Length: 232
Image 1 (cartoon, rainbow, N blue to C red):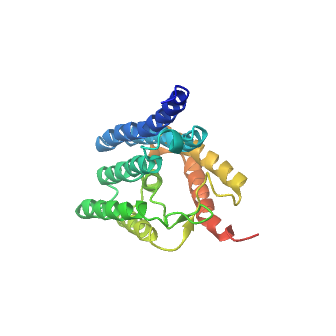
Image 2 (cartoon, helix red, strand yellow):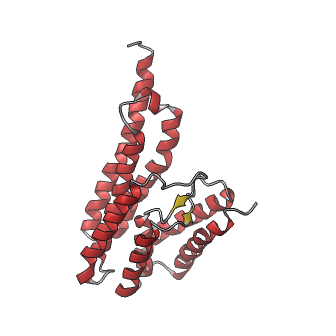
Image 3 (cartoon, rainbow, N blue to C red):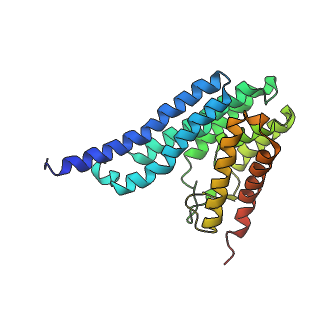
């Protein structure tokens, strides 16, 4: 092995280790969810999201597919994402009392099964990097449910509808990759992040009305954005 190849391989391996740290952060979030400490859970998930947002850039910078070819970065990323985007929020959904007790376990199991199928679907993203179907971001949906606290029937219907939308040919924006209205979308994402942090600090459902209104406004923007996908 050429000595000059060692630093590049080490750098690539450290990038994979950085991605894998998202699993540790997800596990900490899982423990918090199981204890019903939802603000702490979202704090850990926020840290995992930062890792998820940065690791792709690092992977391309250090050419991990060439330097560490025996570790599949795509699979590693999906493993971490399934924990942080699906398993942790479903545990929070189960523990939160948002769903009617007789249905909570069943609904969460259905969502987990549907999400596993969605994560394995090779058509998950369109050619222009939009998500096809609801992108299984259960952490975001559960966050909204914990902030807005609808009744059990409404929460159950929302969760079931979102699970069904994973398999419907509609698109949802990837806020970091889609080119259409990128500047506006990135600005909205920044505003959402600030409002979400404020809501976590204020105890989620105790967040003031201004924070809740900001979260709803950004959600409506993202839901409406697919209407502008094909406008030139």
